[in-house]
Image 1 (tube, rainbow, N blue to C red):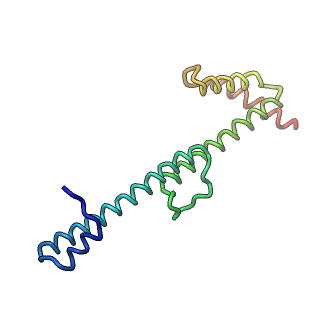
Image 2 (cartoon, one colour; image 1 turned 120 degrees about the horizontal axis):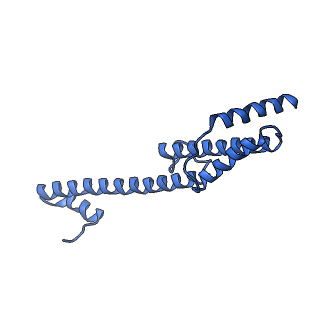
Image 3 (cartoon, helix red, strand yellow; image 1 turned 90 degrees about the vertical axis):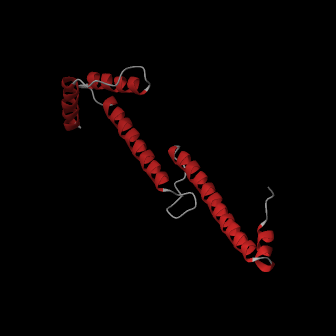
Length: 146
């Protein structure tokens, strides 16, 4: 089966039988649909690559309406921002813990267990509420002294 170019199909619209004209018109419609589908597929590929980029913390300049933007891209950016904020909170807690003298031991153990959990070296952290409460009370006392 041979393929026809758009130009060849358009020639059939000019000088052929009614059946040929209908077939050519239908073929042109299918060709238009195929081209549209290819363009949409290419944009979807770009959007998927954008999600990967956002997951790595890049692509902040991409906004809604841009060729590579998608709702999924926006969701990934928000998740990355949330993760970054959580990392900052954990780092701030570590810095605060370094400056605390009372209750530092239990908090240090909790942070170490958290790190081990993240590294996959231990099962998910089981929280000892007495230790955590004691550490938090000690932190409150130390903050009041500042």
